[in-house]
Length: 142
Image 1: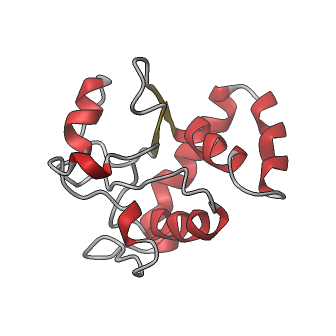
Image 2 (image 1 turned 90 degrees about the vertical axis):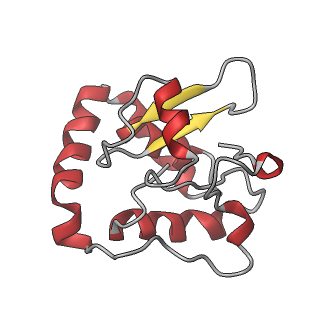
C-alpha cells in the first residue's frame, strides 16, 4: 500500500514491477477504497498517508503488516538479485531504519514531487493494481 500521489512511491512501484517476475506483489494506493478497511483491520489510520505498508500472507489465517523501513526491506528481499543483498540492512534496529525513513517521508513531496492522480500502469502491469474493495477475484497477494 502506497501514497498514490507521491512521486517517490510511484517510482518505487515502477522499480518493483519489472523486478518481480513472479508477480508476488500487487499494489493498492492508500487513497483507494480497498486500502481503508484493510488498514483499519490492523488498527492503522487510513488517513495517514506518510507510511508505506506491505501485507504479507494476505490470504492466510494470520496476515502480517509491515510498515516503513521493514516494508521496504520486505519488498527488496523478494526481488531478483542484486537487490536481495540489501538484506544486510535488517541487522540494524528498526528505530534507526525508521528514523531515516521518516526523514525521507517528511520531505518526499518536495524532493520527488506530487501528482494530482495515482500512477496509471501500462497494460502489462494494470492487473496488479487493486483499486476497489469489491473485486474479490483479484485480491492482492501482498
